[in-house]
Length: 206
Ligand code: FE2
Image (cartoon, rainbow, N blue to C red; front, side, top):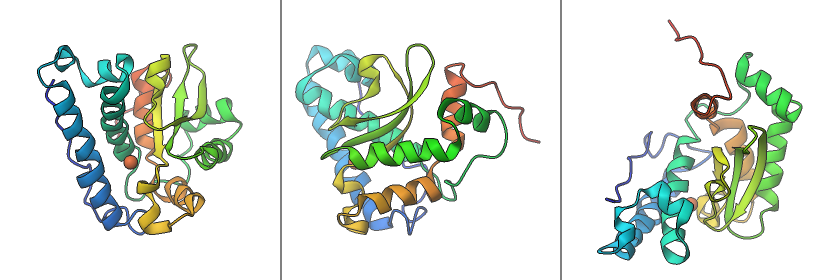
């Protein structure tokens, strides 16, 4: 396995003021790349070197797991956001699915805010689908990932302090509100639901 990070899907100042260019620079260049570098060193010359990143997230333990999962989780987090995101998805199948799963889009966002806010210490808040295809919101500590329990990750919010401390200091709730109201990429969520067959293919836009 060659540990290679995808580039950020937008410019580093594209998410400001909700996530500043400074935070994105430190988060990607120092933290995300740091996990990738550490993982490459840990698996070099070992059997794990032949496994994919997802296999390492599912099956490894200890330092290899921690770094592999942090590489995977951050890539998923970058793609869970976009400039001009947030708010609510337009009327259509995604909105209908979220309403039938959570009561309403606002209820889903509220659950995600609560999962992110109540996670003690470092971790991640997720929208996932379980083995029966039911949508749920949950959080995981440290580097843990829903793939470990055979759940399908659909969207994530990083709630490690390094994700928000430069911009918001200890006010995690304000950072999460900025994510939900201005950054959340509904198209990424919809694409992940389509990939696992939980949402019908959308007609291509003309
Ligand atoms: Fe992070």
